[in-house]
Amino acid sequence: MQVDIKKPRIKCYTCMRPNSTCLCKHLNPFHTNTRFIILMHPKEYRKEKSGTGHITNLQLKNSEVIVGIDFTNNSRVNQILANKKNNAFLLYPGKDSFNISTRKSVEINYFMGNNPYIFILDGTWPCARKMLKLSTNLQQLKRVSFDNNIKSKFIIKQQPAALCLSTIESVYTVINLLNKGNLEKCDTKNFLLPFEKMIDHQLEYALNPNNKNDGVTANKEMITKNIYKKNTERNVIFEKEQL
Image 1: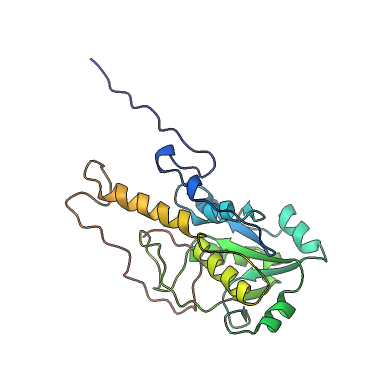
Image 2: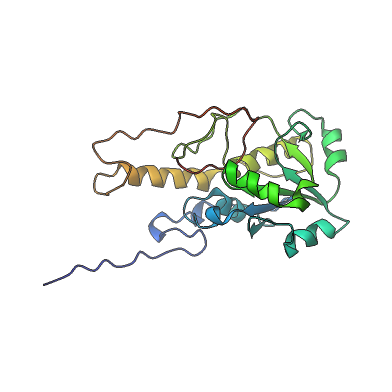
């Protein structure tokens, strides 16, 4: 009896995707004055092929990924916070957050100061809330936020609200706002390109009649995730898990 043994797909160990859908040729990494620290929940870390925190890290030369849930005693996080030369902030909405969408350049520069670090909670809303609740050091940080007027392109994922953004879209928005405030001078034209290509690959796979997909078959129309749960919180900015 002859048994067909499938050869394992060759994987790119930079973008962590199969070579056939490698995103590396679409990467255009650049340096930012602001250091973005991506605090990644372990569930997001395991999403090598679809987590946008990974792509964000690849697009920003001086960004970091730190994996965990409770960062209270995390040595790297505390090292950044202990350095008096650093100005650390948490990207998180709230009444007391500094909304960079509505501030003048001089206000943004004065608030952010020199050597700014922005911490980002990369996880679902429940995961992000838990990370913040447990991490007493992050609770003490000044918060920054923005007004989101664009609709997420992450159509293969269910979002709690129409204006919810993935991690990479949130960072993209922040950098553009900091550009306007003269805190950054980055060309973000192709920043979202690898993210958009990832979505294209996933849609192509889902609609391919030769692929056996759990959620979509050739006989089913691909429905984008445009039905949203009610969400009373303002401007959700983190990537959500598919429901």
